[in-house]
Amino acid sequence: MERLIAEDLSLDRRSILEAMVFCLDNAGASQVIAHTICSSMSAAEAGVTPRQLTARLYLLSDVLFNSHCSRPGASMYRRMFQEYLPQVFERFRQMSEGMSAGDSAAFQESVRRLLCTWSEWSTFPPQFLRGLEAALSRRAAADPGAAAPGGAGEDADPKRREGSKAQMELERQCRLRGLVTTGAPQQLA
Image 1 (cartoon, rainbow, N blue to C red):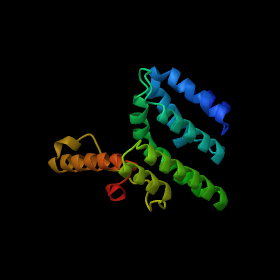
Image 2: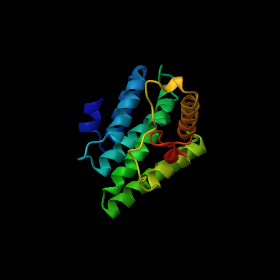
Image 3: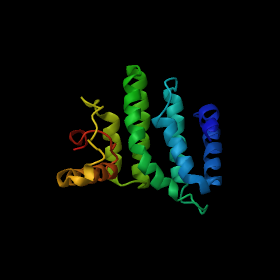
Image 4: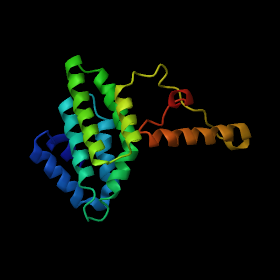
């Protein structure tokens, strides 16, 4: 699958169709395949082009559209994609910042059109789609490296345990809204 995505996938309809058929034929491994597709975008190497990212996103969309088929495991694709898409869109934002203004605008427009399509299909809750669009559009956080504290003795301190519960709830709310769940609480709020 990784070779198929990295070497053979292009914006050509036939290329995307063949990859989508592979995904559905192997739907029993939908969790691994969904992770591979999303990782190819969220952990994309430096040399990947906007066209390659768009082709990968179109593959995801085609698999998503056809995930209602009767193949065992196919229905898992939507749930798995929903879990990974916030990180993918955060990476899209980061990558578009490094593109020329024209390439960035064209790339973001193609992604927004796809979000509109997903909205028309009622693929994901509207709030989740708005969160993905916000992740794509937002400016970089001032302190992206900040992370929530943690440690071996965290459960021993009731205040930390309560803070951990609040952090987990905040992360859950972010996931429901299509937002990334990493960073300091101030970045998630």
